[in-house]
Length: 172
Image (tube, rainbow, N blue to C red):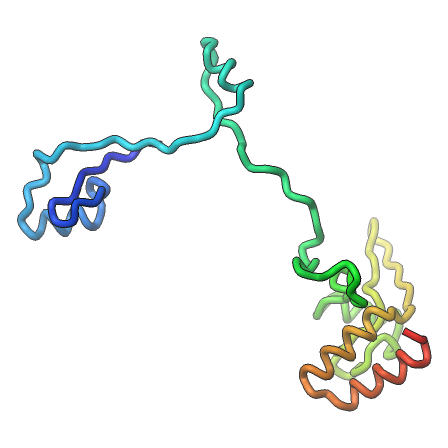
């Protein structure tokens, strides 16, 4: 992709021809038609294989120079340490809306610390593979620890006490 630029007589910097700065300078009375133009092209790294291919008569192709990234879940935390007691809960937690409604319908109130509003879930979400819904309805220690931490952050004392009681019973 090539862009034509000129040197601004006001600042000395390169500006796009017919860009906003160019048009403003024309309005101010500068004559830019005689100014020498510079054609700037975007530089792309090319692998040796493509460099050899470009010597042939075939069309030139640019290389994808970006390294592949490790695939992770969309909801996985970037800075979650390996020894975190809640590691992995972000991918298994039922999100607000459909996930939590389905969990409450299948497992009941026991999967939430505040079942009226479907808040503080302590069971993992239901899986819906090939149209079939399957729920384990088992409490997850990571969920209880996460609920306890979040309840203490937002000062829900009754939820924090309930989470501590359940964690003692399950020895989390």
